[in-house]
Length: 388
Ligand code: GLU
Image (tube, rainbow, N blue to C red):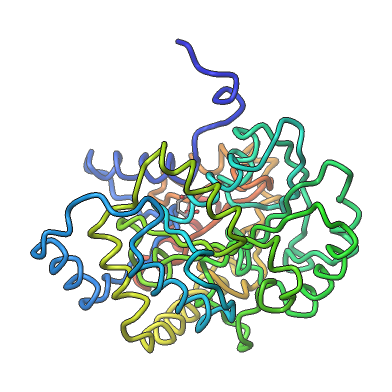
């Protein structure tokens, strides 16, 4: 075995590991409901599927420009302007194999050994691993369930130091569902004006899945004077049920977009040509179903939150967005030891979830409620039985 120093700093993704485990068990004939991976169960919209087929029939099966076709860059610029209120020319847009790759490339392209990256915790599994792989130091910004996993500008200010290079924002957030309100983002902008070295990666991949009733708020829109140090990540995976297509888009300063594309030219090259055609259809086609899907997610959220909070020993706040809830299982830890043991116990009872420790949390687990209602009801019944 000859793994690099960089690789030995990171662990495998626990969201994907748990999902693979659930798939293996199902293939072995076990009845397992997987609420582990964050993936809408809705079918990809037919007009998107048709666009992919048409791309194949047209022979769009060859290399494209590394950072995406100009057609998709235009469609992505339309999306950033229309849906996130961020006006950018196509020279400030790039396309990658999922949002994850854009984040990876942005971090690898900018972090030098010892640079610090502030990451609100609980965090999405891959953020700290990407930072560590790139040689950066993760500075957690802890948030708590009793404040709905939100932090204040003052909490942020306290974590900024001379080596801070990035702040990662993710709203609506994975794994907590927390949304940063506009006033908090404006306060964050004010803090950042005093720290000109700090850049912001704003991961807005869950933007359309927002239950607050307010419009999606994002830093590059609210603080345009800071836009030259904000990289906004978006995509079609979560919004348009296109996880398998692997298309993410990013908008930011031209130097950074070029740096990410320089790296991409040596890693994966262009994102899949067929998926790019499908993503054009997703961004340019009808968007009205997104609100209907959001309503269905809201109903599922209410179902899961109600069921979990009725189980002795478990509790969860009500998520503002995305399709996750972070369940606190601290009262059960005396019986189970830790959240990894609890996760295995739940798996034995036919439900796959991801332990909170995978997200920098503890004594709990994340549920992805992007599954149909019948499965959610049955999964909550199994959880109740398993911990009774
Ligand atoms: N972002 C999703 C999740 O957290 C997909 C899996 C992954 O890439 O981590 O479940």
